[in-house]
Length: 265
Image (tube, rainbow, N blue to C red; front, side, top):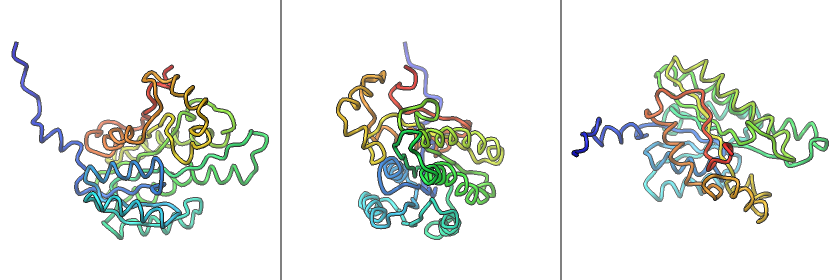
């Protein structure tokens, strides 16, 4: 039997996922998940605005993107500071024009028992994990609405839907991120700006070092996935590119778990 012809030419399908001529701002781009997503979006053709506190680490990320033919610029910012977020948003368009895509990947997890969390622990966690995605997106979305195209990609967590020990403030903030994503989608999708979240499973990053460096815990987490291993940063690339591109035009308000099946077990 002859296979039916494809419904689209290959070039048209590839164009759905292309980020050529797009500008993406990525927070937390100095390491871990933010850095990995910045590389992925650059590989798909986007020009990247790299945001984090550590300027030297951002410069290293920029140079690695340049080394493979991509374009990137550095905007240092302490995202725990609301005034600094305003400055960051005002500076975001200077390198390449107003961002089309915002990836809110910066985060902190202060690992303490709930009774030991201080007010400062709570405030720092909520400011970086929840308030920064709200305020930064709020500042950058008007330009997207004017163009009738934009993408917000928030980084949620397994703890958006379940609790883990010694991560109370982090879990509360990431539950908020999932709801923030739905609220952003409700507010802006009719204007062409879709908002979605990626909820990674267990990936070895600076944020998860306490677990990743414990062989017993790391192995136990891998065994709880359907796939049988923990995540590797390249596993996030496809989902990030999909949510940033025209391929996800009719997807908004969703949290996509990239966790090897951990959350479904």
